[in-house]
Image (cartoon, helix red, strand yellow):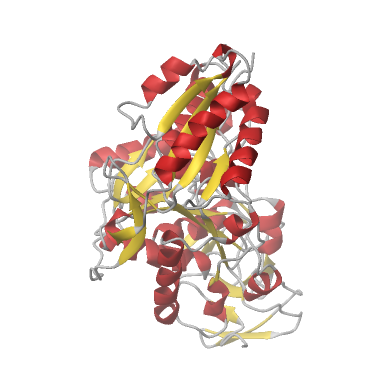
Length: 499
C-alpha cells in the first residue's frame, strides 16, 4: 500500500513537515494553502521547513521547539543536524503547572493467561533461572543451564536461563548497590518459577547479605549454593538443587488473570523520523489503555526526556511526584556534566540518519510512548514497582541497560519501538514494534508488530485493538521474536571505580 500522504505536519504550530517518502529537489509540498518547493533531496523520515527561519530562531515540531537554526533557512530546506542546534544546556528550575491527565477509556475487563505466585504476584512466564552473585561463576552457571536443559528438555516449563554478568566484586558504593539491587530484583521476578542463586563465596556481594536483601522469599522457589563451600563437585551439588526447583515449577499452570495485573515497560532504540508518528504513539495509546484497565506501565531513558520533561512533570498527580521527577531529570543532567559531557550530546548516528536531528526532537517523540496518563510513581534505578498506573524510572538511554532496569522493576514485558531494528532482548519478553514498513519487511524475524501500517493507510482506531491482542497473546505464552531466537541477556548500570 502507498501512504495516503507523502508528508505529515504533526502539529498545527509546526514549522516543519515529516517526509513519509523520500523527496527530490524540486518536488512540491502543498500545505496551509501554499506551495513549497523542496530545495534538496530529502530522505524519508526527515524534515522539510515550511516557513523561512532566521538564524537563532526556534524550529517547531510536535508543537514544541526542537532546537534553533544555525543559519538563515528558507521554506523547502531539508532540516537536519547540520543546520539545527539543540537549545539544551544544564540543569533547570521548574514550576509545577499541573494539567488534567484524566483518561476517558472504558474498562474492558480483559484477561490474560498468567501464573499466580504464592505471594500474590503474577508471572507471564514460568522459567528456571540461575543468577550468579558474581561474574566469577558465570561459566559454572552456563554449564548448569545446559545440563538442566539436556535433562528436562524444558518439559512443563517455559525456559531455563542463566543471567550472567561481569559484576558482584571489586565494586564500590553505588555501583555495588546497583548490582545487588538488580540481581535481587531478578531473583524476585514473578516470571521465574524457580531461581538458583549461585555464589563463589569470597566476593564483595556476600551471599548471606544478598539473600537477606530478598526479604521473606519463597524458600521452595529460591535456593542458594556457595561453590567454595561445596566439598567436591559443585556442579552436581547445584544440579540437585535445580532438579528440585524444576519439579516444583513444572506443577504451575496458567490461569485467567485480570489485565490489571499486567506491568509493561516502555522503551525505544534505533529510533528514526517515524518513531514519533507511528510506533511511539501506538505504544502510548496502549499504555493509556492499560492504565485505564488498572494496569501499570513504566517509562525510562531519562536522558531522552531532556527537552520534553515538562510534559511529564506537569502530568504528575502530586507536587511530591513533581519534585521527584525534577530531581530525577536534574540528577541525570548533573551526571552528564560531572563527566564533562553536554546534556544534549544525543541523538546517535543511526538516529540522525533516520531523521532525528536533536535531543529535543528525539525526546518529544520518545515520551509519546507513555501516552497521556497521569504520573503515579517515580522510581530510582533498581527500585521495584509500588504503584499502579504510569511510573517513571531513572535509568540511562542505553538499550540493554534500560530494558534490564524496566524488567528489574517488575515489568513482565518490554515494548521496544525501533526504526533501525535490533534483535536483542532482556530477561523478560522484549517485543519489537517497527516504526516503518521497510524494517518490518526486511527484519520479520526481529519484529513482533509493525506500526508502519499507520503510514500505509491503517488508522490508530483499527490498529490499537490488534496491538492489544498481540501483547496479551505474548503475556499468555506466545513467544516474542527475541525468545524464539534465544536473544536474552542483562546489563547493569555502572558509574564508578572498579578496584
